[in-house]
Image (tube, rainbow, N blue to C red; front, side, top):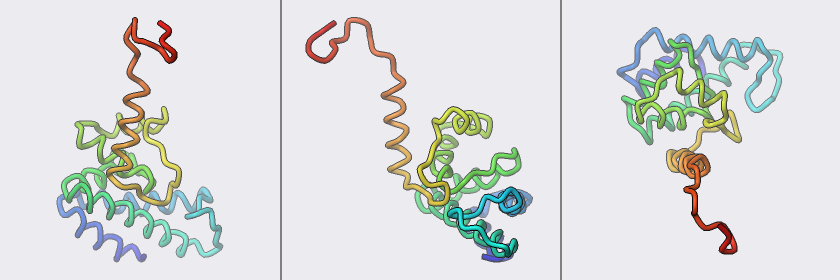
Length: 156
């Protein structure tokens, strides 16, 4: 996807985003290529083509957020680039849910660093349902058990 197509697509998905946020996603794609992070780990000598592949997957991640969370949340995800907090497509839905629950770029960065926002495939977006499921599992695992609660086998 060319940058012009990417820019126009993001404006369609997130009309309320700050226009200066969109070029930061291109910058993120360029940084990924310069640090030899290639989409699906498929290296290419054509740097422009590699950046365009990144724009494709970034667009697909933002599309998934738009489809399941709406344009306001998508705009908030796009605007994270100004923090700077650009995300891989596999992180975008979990970050969108964090934003919907009142989180911000600092909280999202903290959750990525400590593994609360994780992904099995950096390049592919996940559904809202899957993101909510991961959050529910993390919440259950992090809730301390009440003292006196029965353990397996009837032990206390």
